[in-house]
Length: 259
Image 1: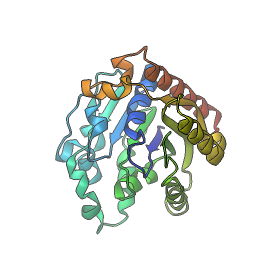
Image 2 (image 1 turned 180 degrees about the horizontal axis):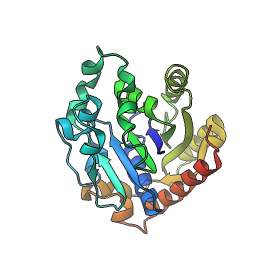
Image 3 (image 1 turned 120 degrees about the horizontal axis):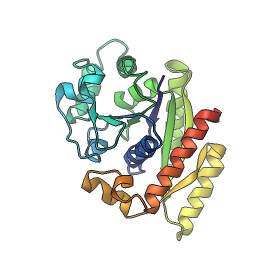
Image 4 (image 1 turned 90 degrees about the vertical axis):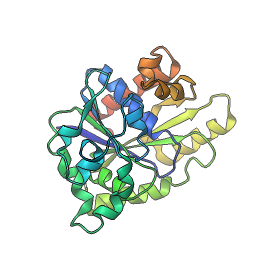
């Protein structure tokens, strides 16, 4: 069965999509079969692979609303063994559309049952808000990865996210675990970044990955070329950091170190 990761943080601009795209690509380079589910109406994970946001059936919106089986909407990418379920702007209306139906938080979990034996890892790129999209992701997930930007107010909203995760565990998904916390956009020349790193490690302890994702111009450049950074510039420090992070994810899954 697949390990299903929700990549989430209620604060925007912390590197959620970047983490999903590049960690998934790094894992595919390590011979794992990967599916990315883009649940953000902005569709940045979709665009990062040179794909277009889709309408209706051929999108995560179509899957969530029951218009399409998941595997019919999945698209191959230029990365071997890596597939994407594209986003749609129609995701903006999901909260209203599903609000009146029975158990709306389980729609994605039910849809994923058809793919649970087809992929080693499934990554869900969540929007920066706790609505039905994020709720569906956390209910469907086996684990959560939390990206945190190494800048001022880095821990803003994290306490709320932890409370949300605990509520999900209590009410809907008791086996949900936190895989780890990823420090992103780290500038080693900045005393503030070093201070944030210390604060995050003090707060989360061993849940924080050893690998830190640095500020590296190649990482934000890559999506404009429709590629993850590993294909855009494999030798860059950004690409190599995501390879190290992928190795940590594999080690934690094998060793059961997540909590």
